[in-house]
Image (cartoon, rainbow, N blue to C red; front, side, top):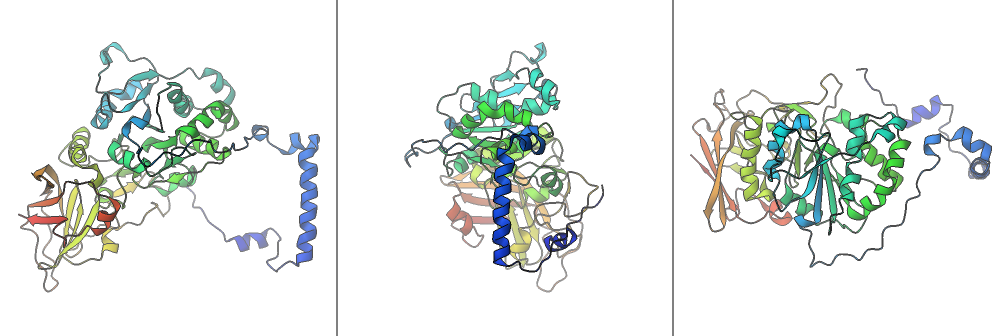
Length: 476
């Protein structure tokens, strides 16, 4: 791929023949009046419109006013009953992806639908109650004849329309996603409760790799990992969606189509941490061990990365991670960095996933950066590869961590949770030679005890190994 160069705005102006010297105010005034007169002529003269304005954009929407809906009282928090999921999949992929959805779907509690491309064959019937009820996507032949779009893209983009037409009652939020995403619905409820569902609200996450954001848009929520729309926003979008799809024949991604249509409505993205597109390949452990300070909301593309736990296959890994999630989603993957002064160790705990021991003292600003155990979605590109900072793994005794992965979880007492982490493998390095340090080679298991209460924003900032009332680590 050719490298991309970015020029400064000043040099671009000079290249185009513009001077960087200041322009007198009188001159600016004359230019402004002339431009206004030209604009009036351009947009009032019928001959100019057809020649100068693309036919695809002659009927851009005027953003409607915000809906006049009573603000929800504090006594009416958002619950799982207020959310409807629209999941788009295919019969061909369902056999492998069924386990991903069933790991988080709660029958008779979670509301939503799985949209398939064709009716399921006999070997997939009867349809299990442990899966979302399925629907067959509508026939989009007419719109495809006009736009020449990819059929799958249009099917995904119109999924929000079909989900809305199901007519579910009491809906505050619609969450669209792919059938190979794992959603953490307790955390989703907690996060959505902080947004005003009576307004036009569009929530999503970015790609972890820099290139997909550049190709599509940094203002776009990547749809596979989950994009959330408030009910009033969907109600405004649905009547205009097909016209919008026709207006953008050059867009080839459904999530970018949504973003473009919403921009025409004057609605822009609320970027939410914790929604993970996982446009990455390889070993994801570095990212999962240094999760950003935000609730984990989703993990997309489990089939594109190595199993989260190397001793298990992908389906087993997801189910194993969900063991911790079912006990306390609010703490899942939340990173706590602390120090064992007696041994001169730094510890990084990703609750429910991993513990790292470093035979040296590192500041939190260093350990918060993920180890780059993974690769970008597209490898043959120029850096930067990611939209966040990383640390390169170094095979050096004072910098390479001893790695322990989540083993089991149980209630330690009425208000305590015990999580166990076991060593993955010997580190294979000598002890750190710096004076005063001690080897961690003899540690095979770590126990972490935490409160059996949800992790709110206040206690999250106070988490520390030194506060034994909140956090306790035991080595074995």
